[in-house]
Length: 223
Ligand code: DC
Image (cartoon, rainbow, N blue to C red; front, side, top):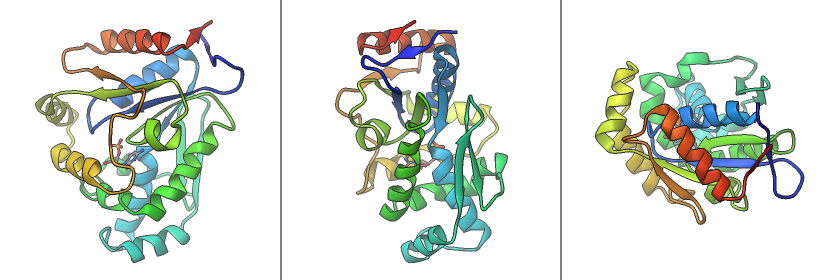
């Protein structure tokens, strides 16, 4: 296994951003495996708050209610040495984080600035413990704006919709992307310094190879 070395010493953050079903999770997971880093799924954190809101009957569009829910929730964000893990008040929601109901409501919850502030702090904390590949929407723009290692992963909308369908998931990707890109706080953007990788016509293997080339050009040294 290779290890990724920062240009200076210390932990490295590789930021992978992009719209829903662009292939960023698969790419982040495989990059982390190849480089010997921990893969952190920041979307799971927004999904976890949404999951609890739905369980408690809290309206995801009611900002005050979502903030109150956040304040009475304990989120434990860790990792198993390979992937990030999350527990909500001591419970791992598992696959329920990817339910249709969570898919349909997570954009509303993630538009609440207080939610973002709390979760960004948890995301940054990972870098105190390990070198990471973190995927999300604002990792290169807000969470780790100073990292030199940034990739914006994209794919045609029909390719992204088909990927979700093939995975047996109902996910309104276009609607979710419009909400995630159009929100006021930390919208999905191509952050400064990010290289764009369009995975529409890549296989998984060729996509990972292209990402590694990009990271090398951005200065990542592989041991
Ligand atoms: O990556 P994902 O599809 O699991 O993310 C779920 C939602 O969480 C996404 O629609 C927007 C939100 N999100 C965000 O606002 N910022 C992030 N860094 C990651 C996800």
